[in-house]
Length: 625
Image (tube, rainbow, N blue to C red):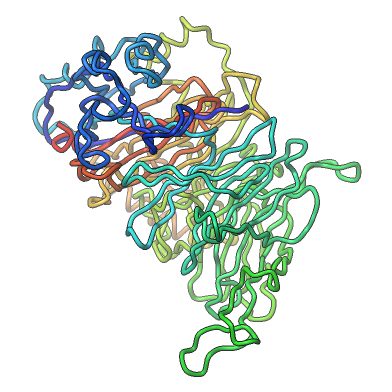
């Protein structure tokens, strides 16, 4: 059975540095105190911000199944560290000593190959830093044990007015994949009854107690996927799974989003699907499809409520309305995509797709039409990018075409809302090349003196890359200038299915209340078996006016911008997890009731082939002391 690990990272922007003790052990907090040992559990550091107020008035180590002897063995230390000017190589790995001392929790942090308590990056070892030094604090805050986690999504809970963490899982030996919902407020974990062969991304449904699930993968026995709705998820007596896509064998889906393609305010589903090559085709195929949401047969004259013909409440997920009519819009898009309005004055919206099998980035304009929306313009943005994978819209803080607006940014992290402007499209090139470094060489190459050359912003074709495409004013005909944010990502093992690196890209600001400046970038390494956090590198102030002038001149001439205005990023932290890092999630909500940390960011990291999730906390140092 495949196993996955979710990492939760916390990032903070400090105004001053205080002491930190590194050797954290964990306590076990089952979501059901009387549950068997195999149940999902929350594993939290001894003196992390998740202390006494967690789960009511239970104080640390009381009523949690720990013996008095084990409680005495718990230390008052935390695994917290500071990345300064040089990037850090962080490894989170099981520790037999910690497992013996504290039961099932066994994760320990090393920094650049050194135990955290001995590392110069240890939070307690940086008292000499000048007050006000712009840096960050990261802390391994908690483990969440759940069955084979894979894809992560944060979905709003309108009742609690905060996000809930949704985790999909799948298996190579069983078709009984499924969904798990985690309440960050209480730590409660609920596994749904609905089963899927290979569930991928999970999305919300506005106005309905339902989630949308994209399902299927190219491995044998999992290729017959679809787009599904799970209505009343987690409510065992009334939960039901409904297939919305048409019945077509061999097609699988990674992503489905809500978009109004008819201009009447009726949100339908736009999805990309793919299938393996067959005897009649040389390569895999991709299609962009429209799943039309049914129209209500009538409306109440008194209230305007949508009704069925018999006068009952209209339900678009009922048996009489499913599956929804599925229409192919064009060939090409196969895995991930984003949706934008590149020209608000016309009657089209644009889909920007990273074609994994087609090995290109493409654009497709869809004309909004009440009868039948259609693709009226398509073009290749880049056909030399390799196996394009993630595709996310972002404002990287450099001057550019500010007319484009976001409809769906292409990410499970809601960094941009509908209507926001953006300047770039970020795409990962998911390549299958292998890292042949031995352990000695690997440890040396991750030291603070090497400069992380294998994750530089130079276009190194030996490995996967992260690109940023700048949206030109004349986006139909002009060149989309490509910048390389980072390159040189390689796979560490040949045992995975279709291995490649890197995976998905995410944008976030460490402080949601201060979104000024370019965002940070989080990257799931996938086959690189690590998560990466990149921070923006500001251009020298003395050149900013000149750069802006050169950029505006380039826009008028329709030529690529001056190289100095390319978005510049540097690696802040690599978190080696020892197994495939499939996806990330970024939340600005506190984790568990009573948490005192504010202005912090929780980065959840799914690590494949381990059965737990790690929580890393990122926030202002003054709030984490």
